Length: 351
Ligand SMILES: Nc1ncnc2c1ncn2[C@@H]1O[C@H](COP(=O)(O)OP(=O)(O)OP(=O)(O)O)[C@@H](O)[C@H]1O
Ligand SMILES: [Mg+2]
Image (cartoon, rainbow, N blue to C red; front, side, top):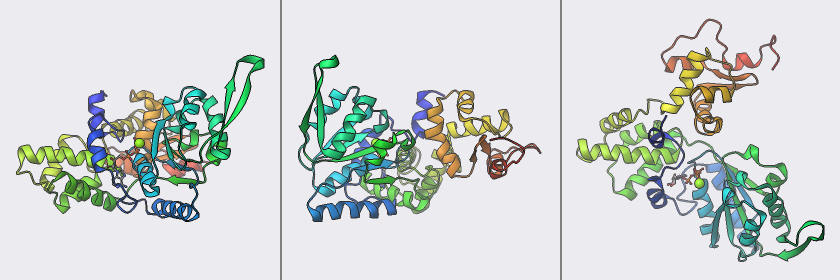
C-alpha cells in the first residue's frame, strides 16, 4: 500500500494535517471533548498542585495515535499558566542532548517529551534522577578518570507521551505520579468534536452527516477531522457546500472508508487473517508480513481498533477472527474456525 493511500485513513499525522490540527486543538480542559475520567483526574492533579503552590507530579499519557496526547500536553501547560518546552524521544540521541534541555528549564516549566519510549537508553538513566531529585549528573572526562558533577535543576513537570506504554522500562513508568490512559472516543464524542471543528472552519455540517462521519472515524479525533475535510471538499465541488448525509456517504465511499470505518489497511489485515490463515490463530508479525506492513504499524495503527470493534480477538496462540469479522467481509468461516474466547480455553493446546 503506497504512502499516498495511507495518508487519508491512518490515525498517524499526515503532512497536511499539521496546520489545520493546530487550529482545531482545544486550548483548555473544558474545551477538550471526551476522555471524561482522564479529564477529571487531570484536573484534580493540576488544581491541587496549584493550591499547594508546587509543580504537579510528572504525567504520562499513553494511547494510540491521534487520540489527543499532544493536545492534552499543551492544555496542561496552559492550565498551569506555565511555559511549555517540547522535545521528543528520537531527538534525544545522547544523554548530553537531554542534559542540555534539563539544565535550561525554568522553574515550573512543563517539559513535553513526545514518543518517550524512543529515547536513548543512557538518557533514560539521567531522566530518572532529574524526575526524582531535580538534578542532573554531568559527566566530566572519559574512562576511569571520569567524574559526575551534580547540577541542580529547577523543579519542572515532565509530561511524557507514548503509543507503547508497554515498552517503557518499569523504573521510568514508576516515576510518573499520574498515568492518563487515552482510549478511543465514542461516536457521540466524535460528533461533538466534528461540530466544533466545523464551526471553527466555517463549514455547515448537518447532524446526520456528523453522525455518519463520526461512526466511520475509528474512534479517533484526528481521523474524524480529516474525514470532515474530505467530505467538505466533496460538498464544495459536487454539492452546494453544505455537508449533508448524502455528501458524507458518497465522499466516504469514494475514499474507501467502509460502513464500520475500516480502511484499506484494516481490510487487508482482515482479508489475510480470514483467507490466508483461515481465521487464525496467527502471530501478529506473520500477519503484518502478509499485508506488506511493519509489525509495529499493524500493532499500533490497525489492530487496536479491530480488537475494540470486535473483529479480532487476541489469544495466547495468536490473533483470531471473530464471527463478526467473517460476516463483515462477506465470507463464511470454515467449520473448524477458531473463535476468539473459545480458542483461549482450548484444553488440548499448549499456549
Ligand atoms: N478530545 C479532543 N477534543 C477535540 N479535538 C481533539 C481531541 N483530541 C484530539 N483532537 C484533535 O485531533 C488532533 C490530533 O490530536 P493530537 O495531535 O493531540 O493526537 P496525539 O495523541 O498527540 O497523536 P500522535 O500519537 O500522532 O502524536 C488534534 O489536532 C485535535 O484537533
Ligand atoms: Mg502527538
